[in-house]
Image 1 (cartoon, rainbow, N blue to C red):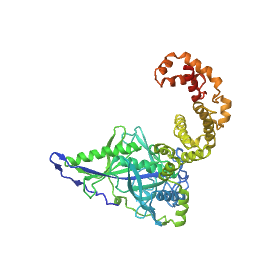
Image 2: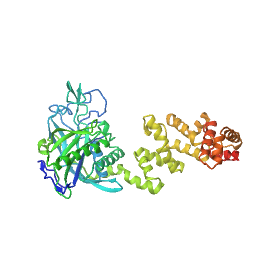
Image 3: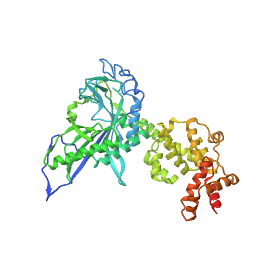
Image 4: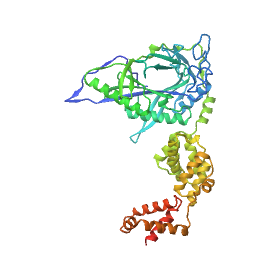
Length: 501
């Protein structure tokens, strides 16, 4: 690390050059908690399934009953190792679970099993791109711990003003992975981009679904300011309750502005935890910020040290596969697709693999990409579903692309066929026949349509004759309307121009 944030308030003198206040530098570090995609909890066999009846996914271990003993979830270890490798971390051959002691109603043991002095992995980095520049953000550590439960407040949106609160311990003991960054982030925008890139990697590795709005990925942000050029870190505040990537940036911007105003007026920054209120876009004090000594960490006597050998590391490496940045570079060189399109294609591993298989079967990477970044996402968004949940396959999509390529199916009709393919899983050829969607490419069948359209639209004809090329599009559109989108667009354009004379 570059150093520790001081816990005592820093006294700043009002620094002026003439009437201009000196510049400050912002320093940000992020602590990200990701719920690991395991079927059972971190130290017991209880289900991690979301949405079950309150207090139904619990047992003596996760509720801290006397005499119960925790057992480490091996899958959680492997998922954390996979993440640490993707973040270029060093995997420690030995790590230790510790008890982090604090008292809260949704923590039944009155301590949380976590890792402290000897974490699973350390000293990594993640590269992000901001403003066209690549920046390396250090990763201090990746460690494992268990989640706490959940308080449900009745009569109010939060604990303040509530008539009473209920405790649901279903989430207690859910495997959590904490990823701590170095204080290398200098702007709220960089913090947002870091979180977006980290979430992308977690989803790609199938480690966590990384949904901030649902709480499966949570971020605590530490922020301080110092005079530009200073080496020592200022006193930090911690921001919580940021439920989207945009909220991370907005909350940090608010606190950055507040700290600069306080310091510029000769005030002090106190170490405290703040809550971000998205409705009012403001930050409010929650409590004074604890230090590590407040948690009285000590090694958990019920858990032996965790040993990760080279065999496990190599096994996990073999399952990691190509990361998003590596896939991006390969797609650029192999398929010649614009970068912004590639970003959509590699948003998920499933979509990226779907694209590659479709491109291989159709021999049309650009057409495959166009469908997967255009009409298919539009359909999925409109129907609130995901590609992997539909009946569409690369074989079906490649077949449809082939029909469009040969002229047997118009682009317009293909959109209707695609919707049916997604819903039913039927082949494009079968749907073209049953829907009567085949493209009309018979000149004799289209001549009459072309002449009819020209006769019915004298204003567009005159506009075209006077040099307005755009007028022809209106005429083509009318012809498409007459043929229900089945006319070969190139042929009908030629015939319309011929009919105009």
